Length: 199
Image (cartoon, rainbow, N blue to C red; front, side, top):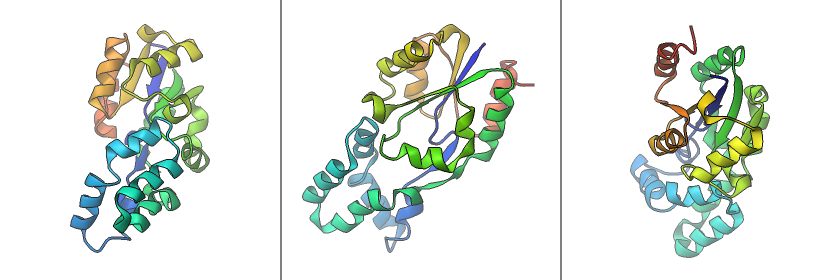
């Protein structure tokens, strides 16, 4: 094993729109309705695929004019959704850095990724990072994995991919990567130890 490839959101970084929207809704129920039906995961994924936030916000405001102010917050207050690094995983990352080359493969908007890069020092540990919004490709599309291999001269058979999304892990394995489905830092450490990648 030579390379460890990390996903970011939910693995190394604690990002959740609820951190911001709790300040702007009266009840959890109202907020959850909004995040399930209006600014939902499918809508957000299109920004991760490269759609500009200005276009995405305008689209929803036209569909849901009564929520126009709340929709605007998704861009205006985006940094408040980015809470902290996931310390246990970042500790593991530093331990792995001593023995392996680190890469990042993240579904993230090109317009917001720099907020994370500026806030968290651990990103400097990566030799290379591929951001979906910059490439106009998104996991679990095999093409973004193949682009990672080509751009950084990575051999899948010598690499491990860590992600919190099962579909992404499935694609990774189909392309010859080993994969760990992330749930907690403790579980990740146990899996790495079982694979003899950490001691």
